[in-house]
Length: 381
Image (cartoon, rainbow, N blue to C red; front, top):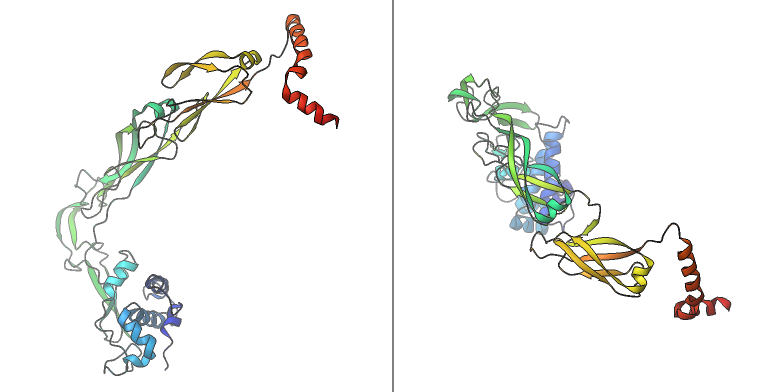
């Protein structure tokens, strides 16, 4: 039977990169793996994908195939996947490939028609770093400005203190796998014998069992514990930013280190200040006379009181900048600036005296203000 083009098998272009070839094989291997695929021709497609990947993932073999096609492997006297002459795959190490592709999942090893093992040959359960945790900490605005210390309490999956994370007592070698952590099963199909090596169910791949199961963790070796940690809130931290507490996450497996705890901050809003990065914005209510005549205002910044001078003839919406009175940058420590926006507030009611004064002022405003004179001139045309 004629073999399909290897690029067609993987569904990639002839100019496909190594990463694209690997990704295509990953999808096919997971789809047609004999342990998960129930399709009648699944094992054959899996074998076909392995063959294509073995050639196209090797730069020198791929070059031969691109030049001569399948005939490049017809003269080496070895038996190929299809039962006829072809490329010698017996020395190809699929175990490292499956270790990489499936990230430690136990898909077993395979022997098609006595051709040698393909797939991953798993032994005892591997060590695995503990999971990371994320905790959202809400803090007041001024706590973010000054920095502080907060205590948090969280539930963490940690090693059982009763059995030190073992899961039991009086450890002995597993009687079923003899300490290997895996067992072999064999099945005959129309394409040959399929030998599968899977994790031992008796010991869950560890290679050992216990005479007595730990009653505290019920054999899991892990238990959820409530822990309290002291969190140093950095000066200048902002909403969405994180700090990492190394080793404060969940316990690792097989002696691997704990994961980390990430503290993500949410900073509450302030009734007066609005923050943009390290700068602060403040709306300052002012009267008409404050703007026209100028004045001085006492402003309470996060660093204390300052005297703010408002120049005469200021306009509503003008912004005054006070350098260095913002919030410190959490990375550099340099403070931002404070921007004060002048917000005109008019009186809701006028006294008789105020009305008379405004009436007198109105008689001179058009004559004295160039902007008004310019608008009136244009408005008449």
